[in-house]
Length: 156
Image (spheres, rainbow, N blue to C red):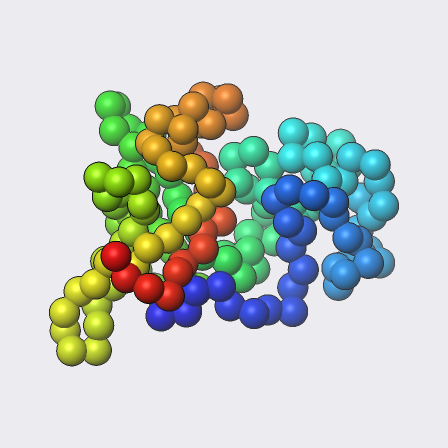
């Protein structure tokens, strides 16, 4: 299963500065080299880079399909008294449910070639508990968020 696929599209890091000169759409981007281009709390119309996700994890509409093809994403949705977490992986059609171990690691089930299932560990934006994710969603005033995920090559 692919984890983070190498792609020619430039998406800025979540923390740090946006390097407009690495981006292939820099010549037509009106946010290029603006002071607020690396501020996730700004809207795109206020000068945030269109490929930098806001605090809810969304990039601008015209870049969403490319973003999903480039990164593994954890979708967090708040229910009545529960938090639903699913993982989408580039190149894989069906989303995977995300679980948490007693010790706090996040994982999903992956079917091996021999038909058995293993638990693959993932990490996303340094969240270690459901409460931290719910606090982030409260801060962003939303019931649905996206997080970039990193899939590790080992099983737990």
